[in-house]
View (cartoon, rainbow, N blue to C red):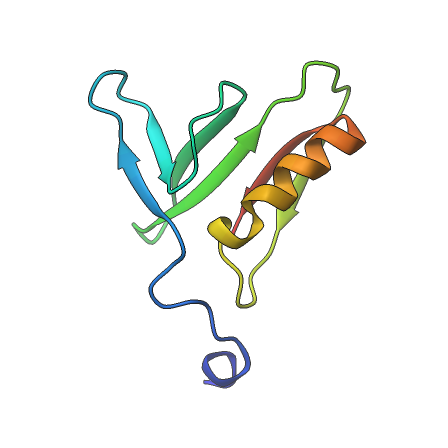
Length: 96
């Protein structure tokens, strides 16, 4: 109950996950498709799905797992994730 009062994620979310008819890839709208960004739906044991964003950096030697749960969504974090990957030269996977 406390979590419902402490955290206010955007409703509706700032993004939508759609499937590209031509390629079958998952896309995050309203953001343009990038070759190094992959959208994934990860199944949970309870039968729900978590949307994750995987960003590949060509010179990466490590991967950052960014887990954020309080009142943020992938649409709000998208550009930050891109910039973190570029400036830190890491792969990054983020989920909310």
